[in-house]
Image 1: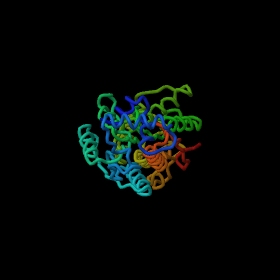
Image 2: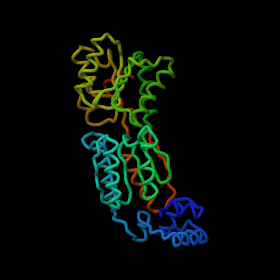
Image 3: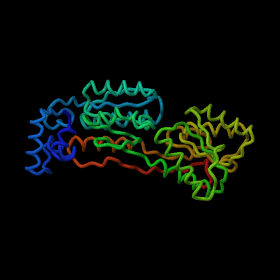
Image 4: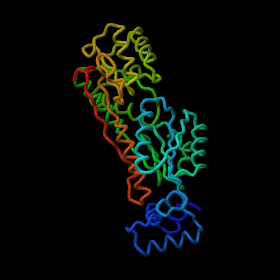
Length: 333
């Protein structure tokens, strides 16, 4: 039996069952008695949500990321562990790679450790096919699942997102307003976040009456030299572009290297915008204009939401945080 069974039989939400388990006063005596009676009837033994009752919690949260060497995810892990520690929780970290089988394996490993919740850091854990996400939804019947920059609808699944689509839309619009017309988009991933970023780029073009052209959209690994070489090959093929918007700062650094090699002046001949606003953005000459994806705010909000779940509070299933466009020397606006 799990918390879903209790909520269904009692005719109340999972959040109400959680509040009963945690002794939250915002539950009527009648409802509390009904829920406790159903728990007795079903012989339901709380695990995760019994934090306030001391029934089986190990004060440990599982964190999964696809690649801890990625600057975005490395920062996310740091902020998550810091916030969890400040709330009295330890963390178990699993770096999974991108294989679905491996992600499932580590997910089940964390469940077997009886962690109190699982945080999925990064959007690569949400698959395009609904059936490939079934293991996450099934687990959410027993423990909270927290998503950072990924979204999956379901009760007891909580998503904290950067508004990537709005961010790239704004960046594209700013480039167009500054006189750019042939804007190349360089991206690294078809993840949930990656799809939103690309859509924002397309929306920005269409809003200003410019066509979306496939020859101006190119995928590349998060590698400075690969990005440089991709731009060089496009240059040699005769593609004309006056701006490059990228899905990651590492790609934007590659664009700067391309510009230096080909003698293109930044930003007069070529405007460049990166994404994430990490150290890369101030290590180039000129320094990069970049979109700040607010990774610290995402992680802090995720942990605060989780503590609210443990406390039986009403918390939103989805929280969206706006990005900031940080203007430096690679753009004219």
